[in-house]
Amino acid sequence: MSYGVDSTLQYTELLFDSPGTTFSGQAGTAVNDWPFYYFTTKNFDMAAIKVISMEIPNVFDTVNSVSRTFIYNNGADNTITIATGNPTGAQLATAIQSAISAISAGFTCTWDSTTLKFTFTQALAISWSLKFPSKLTMYATLGFSVLGSYTATGAASTIVSANIAQITGPYYLQLNSRTAGPFIECNSTDGNPGGGINPTICRIPIDVNKGAVIFYKDPTPDMWFDFIGSRFQYLDFYLTLGNDQNTVPLDMKGSPWSIKLGVLTQRKVVGQGRAVQIGA
Image (tube, rainbow, N blue to C red; front, side, top):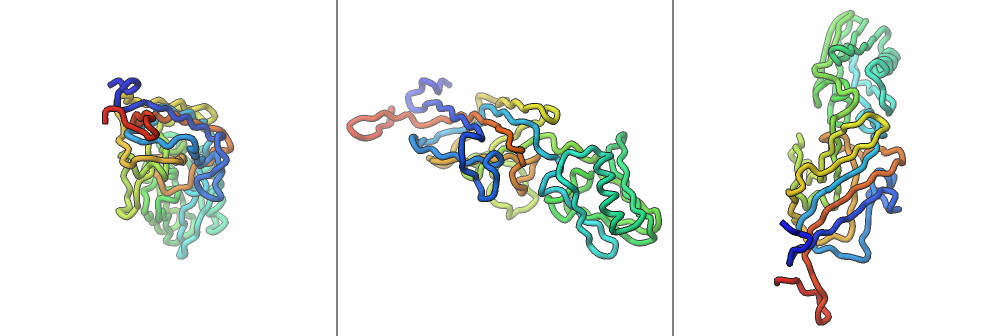
């Protein structure tokens, strides 16, 4: 492959910096969380596309504005809401205990740093449960399964996390685009068969600690995605935690992040007043 000098295809790089636009991909969303870019000087005739590299500061919350709730039931459903941020296991246990104790006296929650699980204990002699009715809950953070309902009965009865709790959040991010995603065969599973067209275009491992920068480089430089459409005049991008396209874009705290996009376009020259494709 020699796309730089190919007679029919040419290689183009598109460089995106989140502060490089004043437009947001959705009303009410910060530009740095969902930047939206317009191309007013070029109209690209697309053939293939891929993400070459990215720089993303690890400043986003592991407990974010969407996945910060679950239901505690003591005969009635009570929605428990935890403050956004990056709590430790012990801090999260304290916050949960405080929230549920306000509803049910004597309730405790503890964190085990060895097993990486939470233990919830009900002091009262009642039947009670913890529920996670959708993906937009704290099921993974607390170590439970999505759509799960966990019940215990009696004084001093307990519920222990069914799985390892993901206190630090998922191990990867998804780069999404509502404009480009439907035209790129980069797919992830979804538990909802009617979930619509997947917007994901790239998966990025989270390989640095909080406050550092994720430097992503494409691991398969010889592989490209066919661009099923033909042209675009604008693109949007936003990040989500893990395999969850239902959440709002990650809150990047105003920090800039950047993308280098590689594009193969149809090579054209101008002749006799019209665009002519070489090799046609």
